[in-house]
Length: 248
Image (cartoon, rainbow, N blue to C red; front, side, top):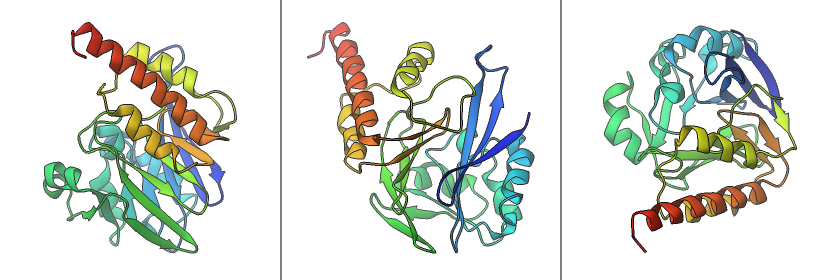
């Protein structure tokens, strides 16, 4: 395996590793995002076994020990499996996540105490860059789920939203909703609940110009429209599940 590096927005780099053995023959990508600034931030660490690949990719962009912030969508191996390896190589690095994730998992599992982020709280990375944390509990899964929005570039770091198969281009202007619907049909990875559409439409209100997917290509275009279409599909799924259960 190899990790590809692509700049998907000014100063935001996608580090992408395709694992062909997952969902063959299409394969499945695991993406991390490095946001440059005076205090560089890594969104997603990758699993522990992928750490050498991701570390070497980061080293092509900046000395790994300069990393200041480590964040991720929720507590899960592909999001944060190598967080302690990163804390070891970057002595100034600090994990930042929402209250639920910190109280339930990270206060115990992280080798250094994390910074708890309130919903809507921002971190100033310097150099004109600032990221905003947004709680998205159970969206698409995980009680502790959240996303980051980089304000200067209008990039939403989506976590598992829009998950899809394949090893496509780093950045696309094509359809990301249809492939995400197909992946949901295959994996059923989302925690269907009546609030899904409302939560995702809140993200659409940011009108992001870039959507940075953890599994799949990043998207350039009308992020609000893509998020709204995804919200509509989840509303349909949640409604069908409630109807099948005889609720509502």
